[in-house]
Length: 364
Length: 157
Image (tube, rainbow over all chains, first blue to last red; front, top):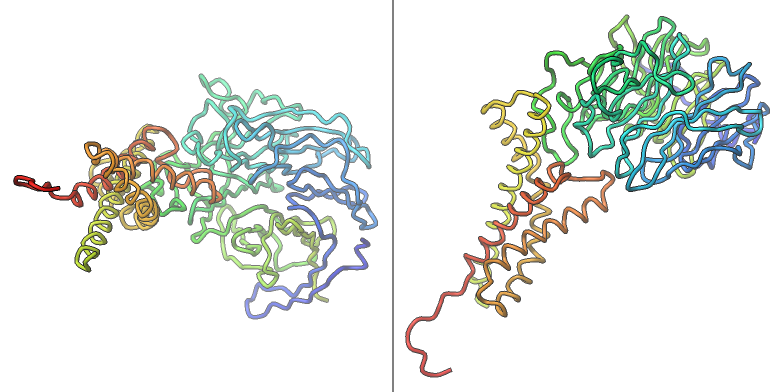
């Protein structure tokens, strides 16, 4: 489909709030199978992952290729598992290297895995696994799966606690419920914060997370992440190496069945979130908006939400969070990802067996 | 069956659900706090009391629905088997709740998005304790509905 021959365009006018912007929403692609992640290619095209295991190419002309990109590692697809993030290496324009996160294994024993590959413009070459969460877990929930690059060319991979293994988020002898920092070959950098601690996994960067599905590194090198909490405990955190973010020792949420997870919302030595949401919005992706098209949103975090069916704009005031605004609620969609495009537009993926890629531009 | 008899059985059923739910909620709380203590989280008596009350207020309504549903099916079965295997009536009633809540948990885990609906049942000790709690509730129902033994000389029939 040509992006200039849009399937649908809706004009949405927001009024009232001083921070509101007028925008219109264009549909660039639809019929995507639970799209999960989006990456912008240097030639103007895009790569989109589908949780069901396919990598789709939208070429520079805006055409969604009918055939998925070949060479993608096989993912274990069930429940929340499947193919997750696609992230282009910072030097992708020269190297063609990209990274894919996905769940691998079986229902009885599975992991979050990370693969590296070369994209030649049509297909993946030499896709190979470079990292696998240890140990294996049972069930198909809480994999994390987002990727961000640090200025030193290492990458951060967010992980989940596997749901039934929440106490393991405090155990440095495994990867569950953590954010790991890796070299681009999957090895652990020697200056990782837990290197040298007896029994600790050398890949760990921060611990005490539940299910981290949003992460970004800003121009100053600050790392922001968000994670799904239980009922009423979704969080945005400012991540620092070696810090413990508390799950499940402290939380602002309770279990889905109403039972208490922890009596505490804070304890010594555990980090507090910048923001927590009660009720939960189920944050699923995040971008720091620095485009030119929406000056009102400059410098804000945009957080896509599944249960909330919105994109939550969170203003940043230094290292603290400020005002919030709910965007795109009129679309009534579960949003899986939000990105800032090279053109300054906001790109959205909707979570559905027939999901859409949407582009948000100013109304005028 | 007389109306009063029916009302008595309904009352005793609700009593069994209440007892099983209260015990089950306490099981959930204590296993959760034990898991936190294993992570060096401080839990004093006041915290334990507040956590138990929290779960009785917010968790027990969900558990009560599961217990009510499983006992509604399991108690008549226990009664029928109890009439055949009279000496084992108490055991059959205990097993009715014990196995019934296991089946209810398995069904909830199958139908709901989360892998395990009740955290205490993630591991065997917690699961067995919850099953025992509901077993005690159903055994109480069996004990309170046990027919009175006939006394005196039976001449005919």
